[in-house]
Amino acid sequence: MKQDMIVILDLGSTENTTIARQIRDLGVYSEIHPHDITVGELEKLENVKGIVLNGGENRVVNGSAVDIDPSLYQCGYPMLAIDHPTAKCEMTRDSLPTEEEMKEFVFGVCQAEANWNMKNFIEDQVERIRRQVGDRKVLLALSGGVDSSVVAAMLIKAIGQQLVCVHVNHGLMRKHESESVVEVFQNQLHANLIYVDAVERFLGKLEGVADPEKKRKIIGGEFIRVFEEEARKLEGIDFLGQGTIYPDIIESGTKTAKMVKSHHNVGGLPEDLKFELVEPLKQLFKDEVRSCGLELGLPESMVYRQPFPGPGLGVRCLGAITRDRLEAVRESDAILREEFERAGLNKKVWQYFTVVPDFKSVGVKNNARCFDYMVIIRAINTVDAMSATVERVDWDVLERITNRILAEVGNVCRVCYDMSPKPPATIEFE
Image 1 (cartoon, helix red, strand yellow):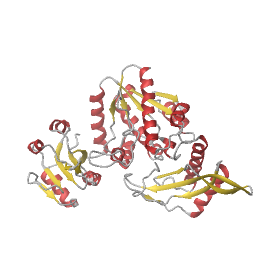
Image 2 (cartoon, helix red, strand yellow; image 1 turned 90 degrees about the horizontal axis):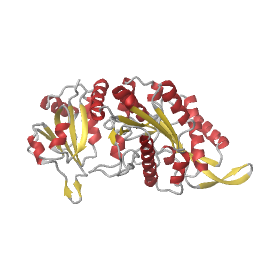
Image 3 (tube, one colour; image 1 turned 30 degrees about the vertical axis):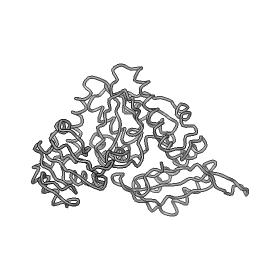
Image 4 (cartoon, one colour; image 1 turned 180 degrees about the horizontal axis):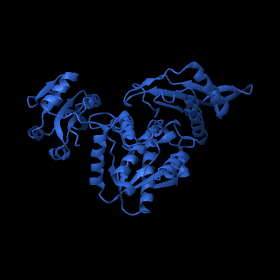
């Protein structure tokens, strides 16, 4: 069934995601698009029933207020203007609409049908993928994380053996992560999987690079180069599949929103990219991605596995990456995951991981002074990854984790617990 859609045009609001989720909670699909969308681009979207003009504090760009193409008013779509006074819209509001006001616009004015659900979303995306790809092939970066796994399942449903999965071991994976990817996807799911050992290549490129944005761009750019090399060994590869989700796009910056941090699959892509992108999840929030995975038949253990950033441990080994600190991150992360599972926190806490900063502190080991690194533990809960709260971990659990890290991880003399929510902090440190 084709899903009815409400289009949200970003005119500088910081509440686009709130509006999108408010509409989806009513059972109607919504997508966020830039303010300068053209009539032609809008008409290519399917089943549009109405438009929300969402103004806000970032509306002034380069000294002038952004606005929509005036010809959009002539397209016949009902419009709701928020913080954007105009007599050309059916409804206007000075602030975010209440639930009843949004219902009035979506169902009363737009006559939209509440047919937004994962089954229908998947059917729509599968049809779009088939139209986009045709009889050609798609190369997918398969990290084994939730996002790439769900994309893989959707692409397999849409195009089957036209999908070629590539897993790149860049040396920044969690402990035994690459081995697990090969076991699950190649040996159990029988995916068309290519394994690439690029550990030395990536660590060489990252040597001495401390700036987090440069690290992300190097990792993202090198990923693309690896894929291009693999694609040249194959025939008919014209597309790159990616597990981009909406928070990735928001945090990487839009035309009316400042960048929080670039994501390797958004801000880190090279300008001379030779692939056309296939990104069927780019309008979904994290909780919706998980629901999509379950609807596609993926096991809960895969769908609810720990989120993992595309740049991997590269953004958890703070500053310039060194092999000793990278190993400290990997080993301490494994201990944290083991102990959280033992305490039953693996199903309660949304995301938890360790980081190792690029400075040392004085400690005492074997009755002598030492000068070693610290490990910082982070454990947070969130629904959509746009905001997060800190998990109140039981003291006995934290003490057990601390004792194990200090005893089992080399070059570490201190363990700390991060108490910072998002905002003002981000989920990751870099």
